[in-house]
Image (tube, rainbow, N blue to C red; front, side, top):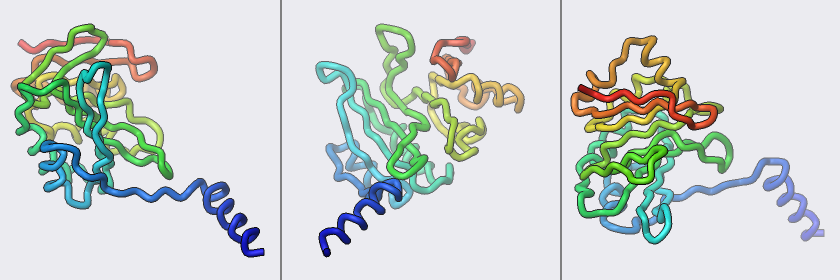
Length: 202
C-alpha cells in the first residue's frame, strides 16, 4: 500500500505537475568562472562550462538569470569586459532565462569573437561582441526593449534580431552613438537566421 501511495505521489509531482526541478549553483571550473562566482551573488546561477566546436575550439560559460532586473547586471558585465582573452580560445558568456519549469531560453551572448555566416571569426582581446537572441515567447518584455542593452559596455560588434532593431529604429536609437567603438551592426531575420543587413561604422 505504501508503495502504491508513493508511486501515485511521484506521478502527480513529475507527471501532472510538469516535473519538479531543483536548480543549484554549479561549482567554478577555472579562474574565469571563479572570478565571476565572486560577483554574481544570488541574481544568477552558474550553469557550467562546456566546450564549443570540435577539437577544443572554444568555451562557453552559461548563467541562469534569477533576478529579472537589468540593473543587477552591472557588476557581472563590468567583470566580463575586463577579462583579458587575448591568449584564450574563443570564449562565450551565455545568459539564459527560465521560461517554464526547467526550460531555459537564451537571451544574449557576450563573446570575444564574431562569427555569423563566416568560416573565419573576427576575434577580440575582450568580450566585445554582443549577440542578442530572438526573444519571443514567455521572455520578459524588458529583453525585447532595445534600451535594455544600451547599458552594456565595450561593444564592437552587435548582432541583433530584426524585431529589436525595428524597435530601436522607431525609438531613434543609434547604436554607433551608444558605443563609439562599435565597428559593425549585423541584423538578422528572427524567423530563419538569415542576415538582413550589415551596417559598418565610419
